[in-house]
Amino acid sequence: MTPEESLFDRFKSMGGRAFQPPSAPISPVDSPRMSVDIAQVVPGKDYATEFGGTFVSEQLFTPSYQHGQISLCADCSLEMLSTWGKTQRLSDPAIGNVVFLDTETTGLAGGTGTNAFLIGVGYRTGAGFQVLQFFLRSPAQERALLTALNDWLRSFNVIVTFNGKTFDLPLLNTRYVLNRVASPFDAYDHLDLLALSRRLWRDRLPSRALGYLEKAILGFERTGEDIPGWVIPELYSAYLRSGDARPLAGVFYHNSMDILSLAALFQHVGGLLANPVQALGASEGGALDMASIARLHEDMGDLVRAAEFYEHSLQHGLPTEFFFKTIDRYAVLCRRQGDWAQAVRLWQMAAEQGSLDSCVELAKYAEHQARDYPTAFVWTEKALKLVPRIYRYEFARKDAERELRQRQARIQKKMQPKQPQEKPQ
Image (cartoon, rainbow, N blue to C red):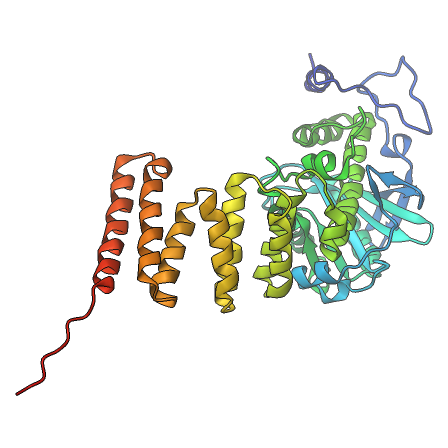
């Protein structure tokens, strides 16, 4: 059995199938090792550069196209997204200056031995959403491919990726250096949605991979044409040996869906950050998402909106663990602003639900701010009663009890009336 046949058998065992080109169907008698050019498999054409030609596939998705629940051509406010990403040139609401980029590579290790053999880009036009895919027919044509990408990117100034900060762009920069072609990427603002996705959904979703977000956030399901990412380098390696591009149809589909999902996620997050209350409403998991957005605003220094969103999340049913965490962050924010009354209200809410930390904070407030030592003693006593429920291990329980009893002893000492000093004779 040949290496290529072994690969196809492996692929079929995962539910894959031999892909038929849209424009020139392959006869059933064709051999799997028969040389089939990529132009027979996916629609596209050669793009000429000073270093030769490279193949570029083109697809246009009309303005009515919905990627799951998201319209790629709807306008949304990008101000908050621009502020978070420090991308000043992302202020155009028509996002005509934004390009979405994703690569398929010969491996995931990076370094000089890894090539980007398929570079997908997407952008909005007056006719809809355009996807271009630059394909490396042969490693010898890499300089032409990189030059073609360079030529085409000149009309944009913001690049959006998913994990592009640590993988796609560093890899492409390396390829530009090795081919002695000037890299274009320093001239662009760069927004990587992976970091933001982790911030928004780390408390609610078990994964923040783009494929998972497609289903959980965008409501999109890929068709049977898709293939798993880990098999893509093997398929390209088999293509270089055999010259048969037919199995790469699934790779092009996979890459184009990554581009569309990236653009849809950009649209969704832009609208979500612009108006979280309207976007989330009473949706399942909305309270957790709202708490994450509140933390985002707090970290950006927008404490007024952070407080607004913390309050909103608490009113819409957070799970117990995140209820306590949100109370704690919100109360600390209030304390930093000198709003002790609000902080006390929040700690009392959590203390009523059995939060030991909130009991301790109330004891600290009563002792050091209000100078109400009897109340400080009561809150410390309540904290002591919660210790056995909170701490699983005996050594941790004893440490917590010792610290609280030391607090009690100090408070008791403060509660004792001061002895009048004798006047000197």
